[in-house]
Length: 455
Image (tube, rainbow, N blue to C red; front, side, top):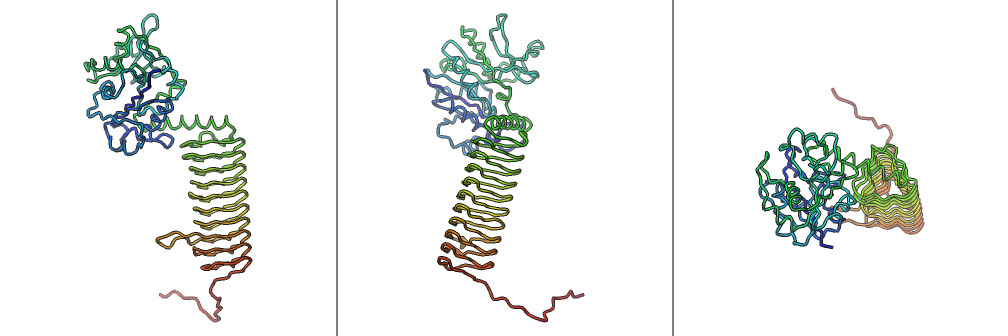
């Protein structure tokens, strides 16, 4: 089969977005729209992806670090036909070409595969959609036998043609050799003074090619974004689709309308996910995981039976089976919690490896530390891991009891079964089973009077 080349049109300014950010870089589900389209093109097995850029070209390239993309600059925005024409020198004659749009981010792989499969030298693939309100779209013209004959843009359409509800999505598939033959002959003698890619439909019909029409399962697949209202509509559609997938795969959602998936979420069975939970990056949830309201989980692995309580933030961490996190806990990158661990309210961890059954219940910071099994860390404990230049580790052995309000000044090691008295500042290693108390002697002063206000 001839190679597939994908052309993505992403040169538009997007003035209706009212933004300095190029339109195709506005995000849906946490990713720029253009990145969604590039990802779909890669899923289709495209040999090469040609992205036509213009407005904000440098910014688009800087944000999009994708080696498979061939960047093509359109210095003047003279219409879709002119934009595709800029890629002609890079398209092999024998290639199949699929034209996509950087501001139409959610077209499904299966929809495009079905369309491309219809393509050959004598057949052009066209994706259309039937809308209750076709205003603003080019209309699909058919003959008496129902065959597509042309596409007319709304500004050029007659009143009768404007009543047609089947419209052009702009997405089409065609042999490269036809593009090379027909694009140079396009005219801009139309209401907008632009070179329309859609004019090649009539050319194809005139040359005896057939037009194979397909439609998406949902009109949102082909909805473009011209303003922030449409961006929000696409976001909600995407999130509802993700919610439906999660419920089908074994999750109970307290409210399917109040969950955001901004990345890749893999789940087990019998999950409970409360409202306003946000997933970012790559997240894996095991069986019977429970997540309370208001949590943010990014690039994390949560094992079977773990409980994430309300308003906890987890990033770059691994949470072991039946661990309990929160409420109001923060696990930063490099945190690894073993089975049955507890990280409670207002606790922050970073690069902390915590052994099975250990507890950091509240109001503590544990960073650059290794804790053994069954360690108890009292409230207000901190590992002092940073001297202003370098980071140092704290090593705590099995069964250690750390009293409340303890400061562990790294590098320091606390051996197994040691006990640290509350309020201590630990600067030296502690041996097996030792009790360490490092605090100032208490003085009680009789007859002391509190300061009084002066007039």
